[in-house]
Length: 242
Image: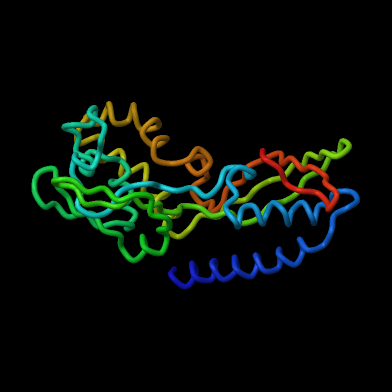
């Protein structure tokens, strides 16, 4: 699994190099499918999130020493941020984190080797009396490619209809597989079986993105239909904000 993930990274680097070469070509006439696809690919690979459809699915959570002091929201006082959290229940069941109880409502959360492979940006560090934690992003799916369906030009503007394909990461596959059972087990313990079943869909929606949640059991990718806007300048067509 680790080798598979490294292969995915190598393929991404190769694709970025090819795209750089394609985009040196001037698209001064009509907007072609090849040029539109290259621009969209580059936007995803460079993380230009204001011009792309969706993006990589991520789970945001804290690792380190965690207590209720990690939250500045007074409404969450008395809420155990680990024991009561569907996110941590899912992440633990998927093998992305290990959770150790230090004492009541005080926990140590660490990434496993699998979790480290999928972890990316760190957003902030929180430190207080009983909290010493960093917020990390865990990647569940990565942009794979775009299939262009059609292009409509209107003067210096163009609309590109496309299917955008996202591929689940190894940890994303595990999260998708374990999420429903892990959340149900958590809620059954606190709410009882009947109520746990009644709220399961809403609770699952709070953890997984709609496209990922609605995937078939055996699927490893999902597709988003999106319209991309392009504008023609003196030096060619450019992908704009969508």
